[in-house]
Amino acid sequence: MTDPLTLLERLNRPGLLVQAARFARAEYNRSRHLRRLFAAADVPGPAEAALKLMEVEAGLERARRERDASYSAARHVVALAALMHEAEILKARRSDAQAKASATSPLRLAM
Image (cartoon, rainbow, N blue to C red):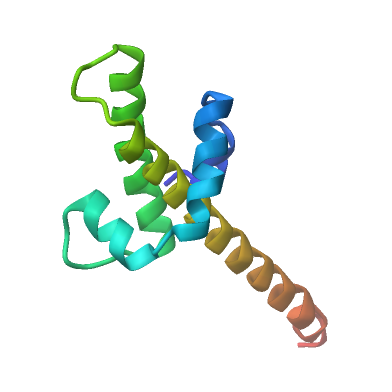
């Protein structure tokens, strides 16, 4: 499985869309927005949510580029804001895991 953070780093979207998503993060509610974006009752974990959001966002990006009449800029902004939020959670978890690993490495050497 590909690392969601690596995939997120490769995204290249218009600056205005990204800026709008950054502003939207202030009002972002993970539970409410993910349920709405996925049309599901349950909220997945950050890694699974990031991968699903990438699929949703890819569809929105395709519709935007094709100038599809069903394209919703508001939904695209919410999807990008959600991706940014999930990326922050994943980065924090990665940092915590790395800190724990480095803290326990001397113990591994002693055994």
